[in-house]
Image (tube, rainbow, N blue to C red; front, side):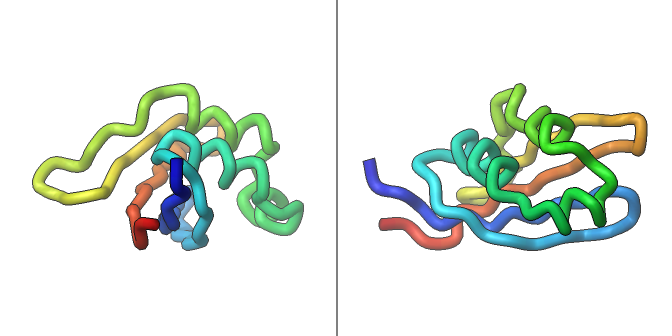
Length: 91
């Protein structure tokens, strides 16, 4: 299976953070994104890698009336984590 470039739009504690990751599916994109988050990112967000990985515990939900856009969420003691996953480029 070919990897797709996904744009990850992460909203947490009033900040919006955007990055990209190549993966085989939206769920795999969440897992890979959480695995490659830098220590600086985790420090900025005041999250552990395990807390970030909680976003992959549920199946990403397709966004209504949007093509190739999904949403995942979870919460921590710090608040709601909201992640939008956008298939940016196929192939």
